[in-house]
Length: 84
Image 1 (cartoon, helix red, strand yellow):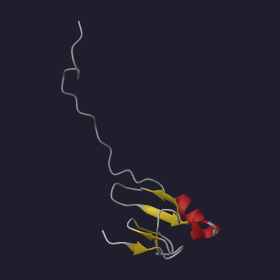
Image 2 (spheres, helix red, strand yellow; image 1 turned 180 degrees about the vertical axis):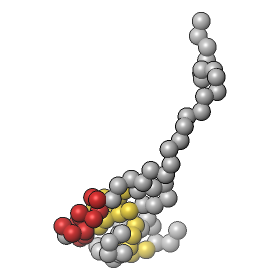
Image 3 (cartoon, one colour; image 1 turned 60 degrees about the vertical axis):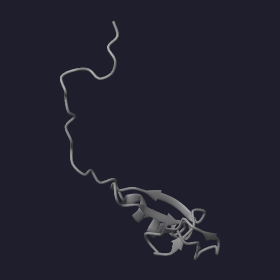
Image 4 (cartoon, one colour; image 1 turned 90 degrees about the horizontal axis):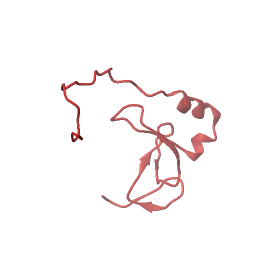
């Protein structure tokens, strides 16, 4: 990974996150909160966007997407070691 510079604070870091609302590349210290609405999607909000009530309400309104209901498999025998 290449070393990049944070747009908000100017810190050099290898782990950058993109804010989902202002689309700036930020370091971990400038990110206020992150969510995973689905397995592959990661939504982050920076400290500047967190202070704006409109973007904070949008972030809080995002709910976790349920991909699909799954049925647990039954193999007919208990798992683990048998104890007598």
